[in-house]
Length: 524
Image (tube, rainbow, N blue to C red):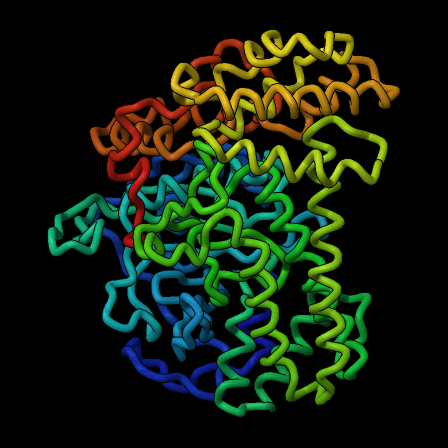
């Protein structure tokens, strides 16, 4: 197994001179050299074949002992120097100081077909940034990260990817709900990949320490390596860079809202500088459409990272990045303009995204009210987001406006308790339906064309938490068939896939309050 190694981060940026793997504050350095922890009995569970192909890894390669040893941390590839990144971050709105790669170790950067990829092990042992943690990960969280990384990609959402999932053969102690009931779980390691894993927090840490030299070095590196059309080393270039990050972050969050994805932990250390979805912890997809829903038990009281709050938190995080870059730009006005543009652009793009979900090609002034009313009514009773929008595509614009029963029958399966919906809510649905049909009459697309259009935007299959938990429960018993099934299913989330119709359904009642299905923590 040969790689075209092209390391840059650990060659062009300042390193931690202390080579000991001890928890400590690291200054004036972007990373610390770390060797992954050897595992006792590694076992490969799954390889994402499409990611392997992307990296130039053949099936012969990924079924080899060499692959297993390399991507479980038992072998360091020749001429590489694994490392953990130094960064800080705001966690739940508060500055947390130095954080860093506490359980992630970057193996190397490689090039394949003129594209560069950083390969990183998550759960491969402690680093100087592990603080009081062990640097390990468990099977439960590793399956969730592996599956979701790939599911998001096939949904068309910018994301880090996941190459492989393996058992370490070791037991790991975890308190899954932070309630004092710790238990041993199977240890696991994920190899994830992206052009870069640089986060907002990489810049924040140096700004917080007034380390302007390292801040500038990192920023110039980031621009040169990943934004080659932008001029590094100039204030104008730094502003262009920030504006680009603003746009990419906005683009990513619009996609999250489109499919009902909730990240769960939008701390600044979990925000990619490339506009990628990164760090899959207590994430979830909306079951009932609810702007206040968050999958994170830690966030249950204040709901800072709820579905409806994600756009605002994206902007808040960009403010923190702007503060970190300010020492190099020294002019607040253009940064403020870029942040103000986010608000303006989000509103425009949000309404356009919702028009697309509703199959509306033309742009009319009245669309905003139609959309606002829909988002309000969807929350009046528990309504499954994925089922609703997918079913809505079957509505014919030739239906009689007063034939609300046909409309309600079409979307009935999206309601969790249709028989219990009060008459006043049904009345609102009927009125909205009447407006929607009148609006469709102004469109030139035929019913079939509109259905095809909507079905390319509204997925039929998403990785609901209960689905991931079923795969976890089976895998914990040594059965990986459901893991494989879900991986293949989620490769084509917009296709009908009649053989998998059972997954086009609301969350079952048994999963409503089951740990892993509704209650999730950052514990991994």
